[in-house]
Length: 364
Image (cartoon, rainbow, N blue to C red; front, side, top):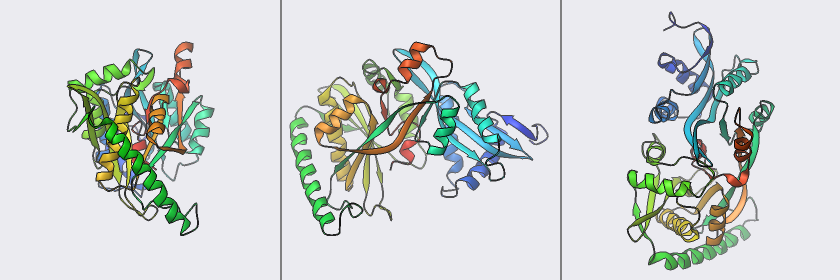
């Protein structure tokens, strides 16, 4: 390999450089399971590109026989006002200790933007966002974080004194479960829920109906949904579809995080939705089904982070409480025409969830 490749310079995806990339990731992300790094990286960049018939969108800098800087984009297909375009989620910006703070990192990011001028970003650090702004990225919106309490063990000790925190958690849990019971009764006779093991052409049709109700969104067809939620290494999702009669009305995707030192209880997440956005009852029924299933799995809270007026309205209608989110959404419009750039930077045009980019890997 080293005899065929230059010892220093920029590279795109090269299968022969994968092991050097994995070594950089093991050093740069010590908190990640080293046994899963290769599987996750290939899923994120190689498998995602192959399903679209594209080359993996990664940019590397190699020096002295090792990859010392990495920039990636998760390739996705984007719907923009009825048209489709290939783009990517800007992720995995990483530089080795020896080159951190040097011009190599910004040069690599600039190279990535030159090769893929239309780019998306969700949840970068403040330091990275400042660099993105300097390179022409535009902030579009911040996701709204919604919380619903399904149990009685939610910790409020960082907000209230001991004793009062427990009483408040009990009161919120009781109120939310009363709301959940009422909404469940309302939709029990209208919608029938079923698990989704794998997505099919029926889900392609569902996405087609959804696409007519949103201006800007990542294409959520069966290919995308299977890659994202069924074939995903090391992370498990549960998917439920609801039917109105024989018609598939919508799908909700969920995940669970186990108890930790910070959160001493299981937490559930409504990760993604596929449904026409012009049906309030379908959206509300999906939310209720997701909450009910997560409660069966023993979670104490359910969180949903989104940017879309119809979905936000449905969450508030069911009883979710809005909180501040740290997920900020940026777009690099690149060489798009003025009309397209205007749509891309219009917060009201977007459908975004925790399932976009790699945000569902770090849901809190």
